[in-house]
Length: 236
Image 1 (cartoon, rainbow, N blue to C red):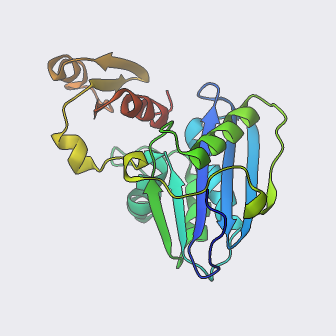
Image 2 (cartoon, rainbow, N blue to C red; image 1 turned 45 degrees about the vertical axis):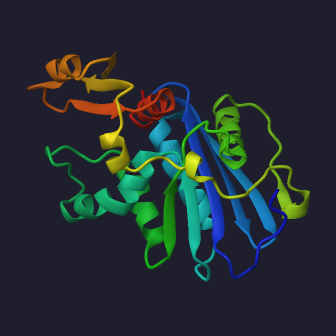
């Protein structure tokens, strides 16, 4: 178990979000490790979405840190990472419109997150959900307990007293890159058409469903856990 960290090291952050319905009651959880100090954060909303809770977790965690240290933030949300590292720049330059001309969802939170991340050294790392990493499991517990409006005690204190192992994720617990996924054998294919999710076990079936459908989304999953992550990131 990690027992200490040098104050000159990166600040480590773990975040997660959850919602019971889309929309529905939701919660978010975060762990912030700075030097020898650990602080758990959590919050909830009576009517929200999983994606809003993922963004809220990152925003609240970053709000607890200064600008004097680099940050490494672990999340299982592809939506969060792609949004803050890629999509927001195009959205903001186009008046917060999508490529199809619609309004960008969660604009209010993206704008706040952009301000929080401006001119800061932040390394965004995607960790596999439910891959057995203690810190990721802990923030998932915080998020789901808050979504269910359950009482849970939050920790704030020295890392030597913290019961959760904050050692950084192993290679196996880090989500594979898009290139690796592209070369991997498919476990399933997922399609989202008019808000309705379907799981297919051949590309032909998936392609037939999405071809010619405006706004349709589709993805290849390379494992059961990858399938679950895609469904979660789509807010289904």
